[in-house]
Amino acid sequence: MRNILVLILICCSLNSCKNIKPISSKTSLETKPHFDWQAANVYFLLTDRFANGDTSNDNLVKRDKETGTLRGFEGGDFAGIEQRIEDGYFTDLGVNAIWLTPIFEQIHDGVDEGTGFTYAYHGYWAKDWTAVEPAYGTIGEFKNLVQLAHSKGIRILLDVVINHTGPVTQMDPQWPESWVRTGPTCSYQDQESAVSCTLTNNLPDIRTDSKEEVDLPEILVNKWKAEGRYEQEVKELNLFFETSKLPRTPANYLIKWVTDYARETGVDGFRVDTVKHVEESVWATFNEQAKLAFNEWKENNPEKKIHDDEFFIMGELYGYSAASGRGYDFGDAVVDYFDFGYDAMINFSFKSDAQSDYKTLFKKYDQIRSNLLSEKEDTAVFVNYISSHDDGQPFDPAREKMMESGSKLLLTPGISQIYYGDETARSLEAENANGDANLRTNMNWDNVDQGTLAHWQKLGRFRRDHPAVGAGEVLPSNYKGSGSVTTRSYSKDGYSDKVIIGAGLPNGLLTLNVSETFKNRMQLRNYYTGERVAMKNGMVQIQVENGIILLESINE
Image: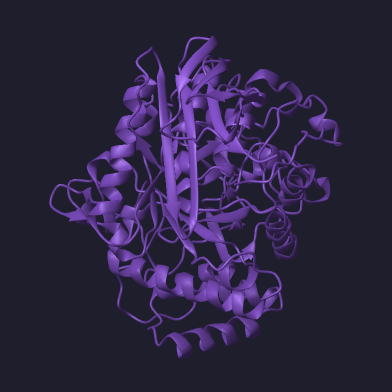
């Protein structure tokens, strides 16, 4: 049973947050809510587009060529994210994990992709994996961000890429042929043509399949020497290869450089980009080394750690559908990446499944969750989303049904992934923007849809405080009306949780039999409205608002 704390949404002190107003609902937040990755509420943001907290780093790297609309750096940084953590923005939204786009130093120049000249504002065009992108901040600032998030009970997922460098430009030379391939372009006819290839033109592919030991690229040697850190980097590499007993292949250099972020900063997990473009054996080594690196950080920082969970690995396997089970079908081979160290995969099917009614949606995803967990002993889970940075067919492109979007995303079994601005109805269109730049508009701090935000906050906090929402079993219901009413039941590691969730219901007073979920002596509350609910002979009368009821038991 939970002790009740009343949370009031604190208005941001920053001018850019001035339009975010308090809401009056209550929450069942404990000092430390029970956390389960299977039920996590993850907030995904593009660092450059979220909030600019330090204008002094905006032009540290000269990137002054004219770009296409929203194809240059806009100023977002670690300081901006920290300010929102400190202000309680993520806490009020019920977020317990933040996923940031890659923070590695990006190529200094840009390229014309046919949609306008583009700089690497998004973080996916690495120049040097051992350095942090100056426009975002410093490694010290990132460490502070991680610790600040941890102090609020929020975990950090860092987006990582190991299968390609950034494009080649006059300022960013190509790496040696022993390190990268420049063709052929992936054709996706079978597994080979999805792995031993380049994703697109001028995106050199790391030879992750190479067994040949290689020297450091001269490009990095010269860069590190100019920055006065060559000897230290080589010392660390020698120690890594001596300790791990791994050969000095291109893939293993990348594994060392990327897992250092777990070893040195205490991030709680990685979101791994383009999983199907790298060999399974490489992922097995990568994921093993990531977990070892995180354990090393915990051993060296016992006073800073907030949990004893293993490092979490979430993969982006383009086209993966959780409904198809654990495996991904290349046509000539089915690969189960969970067998190679992955804990979760992004589910590309949810945005289309969400077009169905609540009853059908909840039933389907309860079955998907059950199937994935029952196939093998290891845990395999999925991450649902309604919009993202590179999906041009979101659930609600015009942002016309954001209340429904929040209800379906946050109340469906599985991990929920909020894309920055889902909760504020941020526009997915910008004047004169082309392609995915439309999906990456600046966070709309100055024109937040208050009703949408309040709705997402209530649902998000309820999900965070009740693991039964995302990871509980959906029990049969005696409800026969329109919409859906389900009981969610969760029991794991000595922790139990039960709630009743209604969605898509007619607004007004609803009479429910709750005797199979709650006992007569229990104090109940509809979390969505904040009203206490009296139970008599197993029955309650409960007020439905916005089609939602969130029924929980509480203590005095």
